[in-house]
Amino acid sequence: MTSNLSWVPPEVDTTVPNPARVYDYWLNGDHNFQADRELGEQILKIMPGIRDAARLNRAFLRRAAAHMAEAGVRQFLDIGSGIPTVGNLHEIVQRIDPSCRVVYVDRESVAVAHAKLLLRGNDRCAAIQADLRDVNDIFDAPETRDLLDLDRPIGLFMLLLLHFVPDSWEPHAILARYRERMAPGSFLAVSHVAADANSSGLDEAIEAYKSTQNDPIPRTHDQVLSFFEGFDVIEPGVVGCAMWNPQGAGDMSEDPEINSLPYAGVGRKP
Image (cartoon, rainbow, N blue to C red; front, side, top):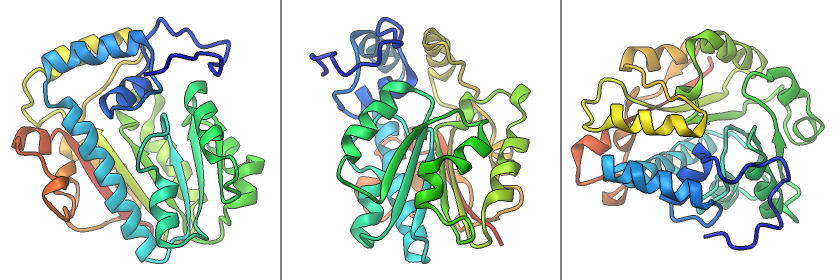
């Protein structure tokens, strides 16, 4: 856990838990504060499998990134990338091809500060602070323009992000703006908390999460599938996170309920 707080941006209130830092705690990271750990433990008591679900989402990131890289994509944009932890996107794709370029985006200043520290010396990666809705600011940022050629396909990741986007923000319209800026052959990867997975404790966990000043909005399978409008959904479709092309026992949980807790899918822009 973090003991030296000298790196923390001054505007960050470390007494208020944050979803990205709670997620980091569940992944056994060390970029979290006491408030994050307390909420993380509270939710673990409600849903003991949530830590496993976080791990499975990370495994989906690895498989989706490898799929895109093997399809020839060499540039990636990760929106809501969160706190850097083991198995980051750039580590995955640069292991496949060191020329791959990655731009990380998060509105949480702690996440961006740590990403910049992690990426020092890697001139094929950058981290910028922006909101999901700032589509043009993200694509037109100097770091993005330096690293990504928008005339060529990109891999866009929005993992465990869209369930923090209320319908009043018009998430489909936001996604359409991203799609319009992406070249044909680009990919979109999404994971999202499932409203119809019959997961015990989900409602209580969501209520606890409201202390982060974020209100998670689980959505049904059809609602998550609708986020891929304008994309050809890759087989096996939108499925439980662990069931998206698993490659081994480590990509699945022994608890079937956890395997289906977050939905996940990948689409390709024709």
